[in-house]
Structures are given as C-alpha cells and as structure tokens.
Length: 336
Length: 228
Image (tube, rainbow over all chains, first blue to last red; front, side, top):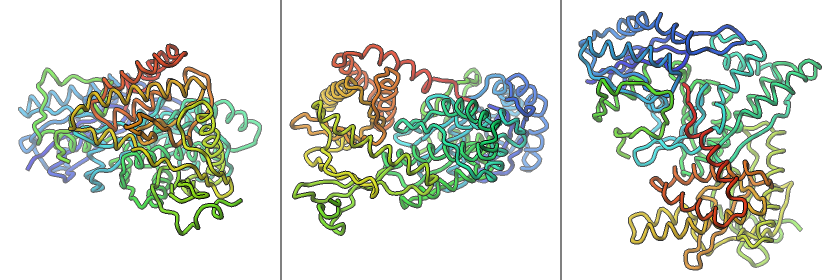
C-alpha cells in the first residue's frame, strides 16, 4: 500500500489531499476569494495560503485518519501557476517531508488534473479538454507524453469568463464562473459575438474586448440584459471548445473525452460535450467540483503514480516554476 | 440539378469518415469517383450560431478550393454545392495516402529521415505558394493533406476554416497551427519542421514577416505563463 499526500496552491485554491492506492482518504480545500470586481493578486493569495495551510494539513490528516508515519511520499505542485502562492505551499511540503523523513515528488499541475480525472471517471485513454482560469488545452496521450494538440493562443477561457464577471461586478464566491453560469440560465437572447477557431487552437481575447465594449453599450441602451450576455458568452466560447475537442478526437481517432479543470464543472459545457460525443458514438467523462476545481488529492494521485514509477525529486530540485508545460513531463507510469 | 440525382442514389453512398465537421461519403458523380461532404447539424451549438458557421464555412471551402486550383495548387475539384442540404460534392482524390498515415508508415523503415525531409520540403513550398495568393487554410494538419510519393504531389483538403487574408499575422498563425499538429501527431520531428520552414522561406516572397510573426505567436502560446 502506498499512501501519498498532495499539496496544491498554484492559484487561489489551497488544498491538501491524501490518496492511498486509488482511494481518496481526504481532500481538504480552502479558497481565497477576492472582492467582487477584482481578480486575486499573487501577494494576497500567498498570504491566504500561508495563513491557512497548517490548519488545512491538520484537517486532511485527521479526516484520513493517518499519521505522518503512514505516509510514503510528499507531493507538491511544482508548476505551472503563480509564483508566490506556489512557493508558500512548496515550503510547507519541503518542511514536512524533512520532519517526517519522506521523499518528495514534484508534480505538474496539469498532469495532476488529468490523472485525477482518469482515476475518478475510469476513462482509459481519453482526449482531454483542460479548461481553467489559467489553461485551455486539448491533450492526448501518446508515447510517454501528454501531448498538446490544441490550446488558446492568448488568454484562457476561465480568464475570459472571470474578467467578464468583473465587468458585471459579479461575486467571486464561490467562483465568478459559477455565478456567470447561474445568471446565464436566465438569458434568452443570443447576442452575436466573434467566433475564433484556428484549427485545433482557439482565441478568446478578441471576444472579451468585444463583449466588454459592445456588450456594455448594448446593456446601457437596454437592448439586452446581463443574463443575455452571460448566456451568449457561454454559448459562444463553449461551442468553440467543443469544436476543437471534436477536431482533436477526429484527428487522433479517439472515442472518449474527459473534461478537467475549474471551468469543467460548468454543467452547460458538460452537456454540450456530451451531445457532441453522442453524435460521434463516443463518451464523455466529467467530474464534479470536488475534483474539477484545484485540490490536493489530484496532486497526491499524480504523485502516487510518479512515486511508484520511481520519479522522486532531490531536495535541491524541489524549486517551483511558473512555466511548466504539460508536454514536458515524462509519463513513466503508463505503459500504453 | 440535385446532388442526389447526379450521384448514385444515397443508398450507394459509402461512409468514408466522420470528421469533426462533416461526414464524408464516397460515390460516383456523372461517372467520376467523387466524395460527398455533408455537414450535419451540430446540435450542441445554438441553431442560429450553427447555421451561420456552417453556411460561412461551406462557401469559404468551395471558394478556396477553386482559388487553389486556379493558381496551380492541388485541391479537389468542386462538382456540386448545395447550401440547403449542406452538401459539397467534390473530386475523390484516390491516388495518394493521407499524410498522417504516410508519415506513420515510415516509422522504423529505411531512409525515413531522407523521405521525411523530402516530404516536408514539398509541404513548405506548397504552403508558400498558397500563402502568396493570400489564402489561409485555417486547419493545417497532417490529416488534411494527401500525398502521392511516386509523383511527389501534395493535395490540400478540408478548407472549411479557410479565408483570404494578406496579413502576416494570419499566415503566421496558420503555420503555428501546423507546427502544433505536426509535432504532437509525430513526436521527435522538430528538425523536420525546421526544414519545412526553411523551404517555406525559400519559396515565399513574403516569408520574412510571416516567420517573424510565427516566432511571436509561439511566445504567446507555447511558452507563455500558465497559471492554475
């Protein structure tokens, strides 16, 4: 039996989770919410993580009913993410690893999402749509790497949604995207927006500037409601995401699709993806907010795989990096 | 004339492939081997969005194929176009292999490097020619090219995302899309892609600005900061 503990804090979610041979023993999370109309800043987010991390760690150990002696490896997010929050959590991981005399495993955040999605849904070798506040990628596995087939060429889809939520001054609690999703349900009128797909890549910055300027004007003139704009924005950007996912599936000859990342818990996106998959005779796998949104268990799960295949980091290699691409990781734990 | 009347009856259509956009069937059209590309309704998108996109893409596709052929770039000939039925009937390119399959078939074989270099050299020159007439393909992948190794001919297909533009930015993104698809579909071909770019640079009159833009787009995408 291998027990792994994972520390995550690459963005505004702080999480510690414990996983033992595919079973999640605990998964505690504490989220930093910026005031409405604002994004989360690295400094404030890091301060939040430092303030709460020991409490979250204690709760994770208690809930899992394990003692440090039971743990086999300490996993933490090496990147990608915001520098200050990453460092503050990595310091804690390094400290407990030395106190408990356990090996450290440095995990790529995106790979964490993929491995957790595979574990929870049982998808074997899916095409992965990874959508969050910082990432938008279409990924498929081949020859020991998670290869990126398509991605955003500018901002992430979650960033586009978050920034539009700021325009509308929507609350950041539980998340701006969630509040957009709820408001969109009341939208009835489709406001035409740019639709930017380039092969398997997408672009969102033009859509954001368009809706920020034109949308605001339409709103002021009373031609549409805030709900209509949320609805139109979701319908447009999600259609783009489903389209590039389908294109990647056709290109790779794949029948399974897995959605991960914070935006992945949007039910409308899941519905659209399911419709697409059904039309192709394929299947969609999605997880709920426990695992879609950043959490500690996903880092523990990817770390568990890495640890078992011998990927352990020396202390001097446990630095963090803001830039760490999904396809840089050698996937030593898969044999297919 | 309806497509159905001139093609064999629909019952004789054979499904070749379900792509992301459309189903592709083989049939005969006035005695010639043809394919029917049928863009089915995408029920996941809003009907008004779907209709607009489909219509725009179909007419772009037909125009771009004609534009290529007019300038000596190999693309299927358009036989018939039916916007209401969402059908394009075009020449069936039978004397070649899908580039993706061809490249995969080279793996482990003799003279792989040499054959690959020769091939990417050709791709570079064809794309240079295409960009010089301001045509942006929009979905350059190795699934969208057909290669005849004997005659060393490359046919471009699937122009659904194509458009006309003279901007170096658009051409740069076009190459960027290919680079991503190429390297992810065919691991360890970085040097080959450079040969492709060199060939492109030699054959295109406006290559310098385009390659410069490509570098710019790469830093926007591949190496940009990624957060949580």
